[in-house]
Image (cartoon, rainbow, N blue to C red):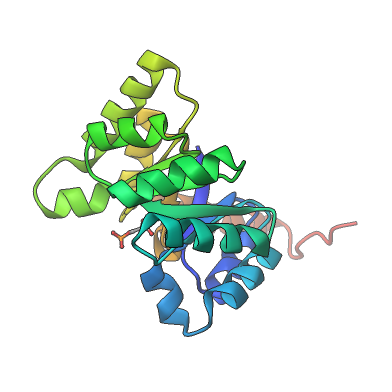
Length: 220
Ligand code: E4P
């Protein structure tokens, strides 16, 4: 499963990228607004940090404006994936942009039938929002599983990006379901490393080593 960071914060992206396990980035209007910089500038900086798919979302709500905005966003960098919401206009924009050869991430997906529409419109990525469904007492991960099954039934090439992931358990469940991508906040990526037995084990190894060898070997 590819790991995407769901942030527009450059410091978080630099740190995540330095670990060598970040394959791409998702942003949305909320995340861009949080950084307070124009989207073109912020996204360009993000592209300099992470070499992978970088989703940049349109804020227009009618199809012709979304298409124009999407084309402009796509000009920022070759790695840009244009993000469109799963509305009627968003789907029209997805079809048009995809036919132009642009890659589109259809976002705000909350049902399998919505995901089917996005695939038919040529979406490169579909983004089911797991955490937001959990918030309203639905099992969000069931949506990921159902979409994967439907896409498999018909051989759709659209990638499933499990979004709105809020915990390490969400990441594990998305991977078990076979999601192509999981996008997560920096905090969740960081939490994935943690296990008390790793810390305890390392402490013991170093203690045992130190009892016999006084110095740490120098590399090279
Ligand atoms: C995905 O592309 C969205 O930006 C994101 O995952 C939304 O997550 P949230 O529900 O935690 O805001």
